[in-house]
Amino acid sequence: METILDIKIKRANKVYYAGEMFSGPIQVLTSSIEIVKPGKFPSGKTEISFEFPLHVKGNKVLYETYHGVFVNIQYTLWCDLKRSLLTKDLTKICEFIIHSTPQKGKSTPSPVDFTITPETLQNVKERASLPKFLIRGHLNSTNCVITHPLTGELVVEYSEAAIKNTELHLVRVETCGCVEGYARNATEIQNIQIADGDVCRSLSVPIYIIFPRLFTCPTLETTNFEVEFEVNIVVLLHDDHFITENFPLKLCGI
Image (cartoon, one colour):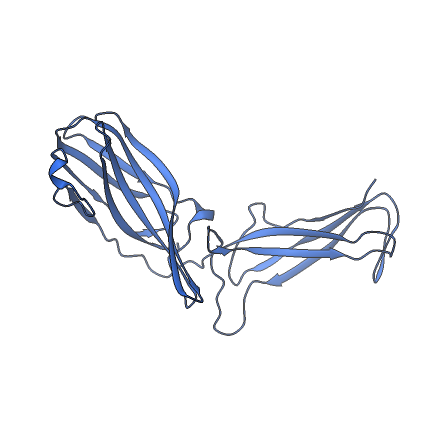
């Protein structure tokens, strides 16, 4: 039987907050006596416990775990097992998740009412060729607690063209510093269909988005990079016209 090195984090979900104690055992499973510097492990499973606080020195902070395209914030525990000269050393890497420290007080809601017509659309070259439509709605808040859903409603009051599809696009906007300056890139995280086909006029269509935790984080603005978020309401007409309205979001911790 080969020797197996494993890291067992004490919490099953591997989620911790800054300032908490991070602990667990390192396990070595072997069927023979392995020489390990500076000592030896007997055959069978051996555990070595570890424990340390999750904090950084000075004014630095532990940002929340975030898996992006151009910005990645990840935390890993790395364990090396040194063995005899003729036996290959073992390495085990285990990722754990950091969530932002809960904030004191409640975030202030920032509701947004919107009206979408051909006249309100931006970056439209041939506005006169667009069919007439009127779409109203609201978002209950664009200042969002990351553990709570983004909610609201959309109502199609009028549309000359039949509607094919209505979607919500959750987008992350990453800004990174480089030699030439700053590069800003937007990528889609989530695409949710909220209505299929030509919805009834004056019918309230609910808006409901749950933020995926590993692909979102509290809005970040640092010296070297920024991570921001926005939601797009996208309505596709049967004549292949796209109607898109963009709303910046500010995400905050619990």
